[in-house]
Length: 192
Image 1 (cartoon, rainbow, N blue to C red):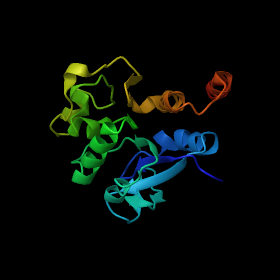
Image 2 (image 1 turned 45 degrees about the vertical axis):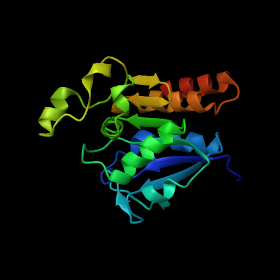
Image 3 (image 1 turned 180 degrees about the vertical axis):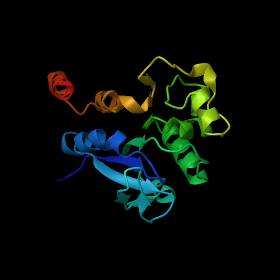
């Protein structure tokens, strides 16, 4: 199957793979995008579900890709960000590439400085950060607690429980459904 361009998907230990499964499936099957797993190293990464994922490229190698439509950052533990991830996020943002993060995943955007100037949401509230005994990585001035999904320019962020809404926002932003009625039909089928 010839692919139009790449969707990068960040793998890191204990990432919540279920939050991006629908998005990746439809981006590949309907949107004809190549899903490229990227990680700090070319070694298997075990997700929260216990499934092991083998990255296609390192974060550093992904810097050289020119045909990237989006970067997906699934939720997972709040942890220090690899320097290469912050560099990749900043570079893609400067190039106008869509960056989408769900659940706790937006902490990478915060660490890259993008949430200082963009509205966002996350599952990691101030209280959740305190329970994790970690310094809150988020600038809270632009945080929208009540929103399930927030799109601000080329950034999409979502609460973890909103993974279907997150996927639909990605499909809309990338225009993978030529006829909006097809997206509506998918949404209705999912909601039952």
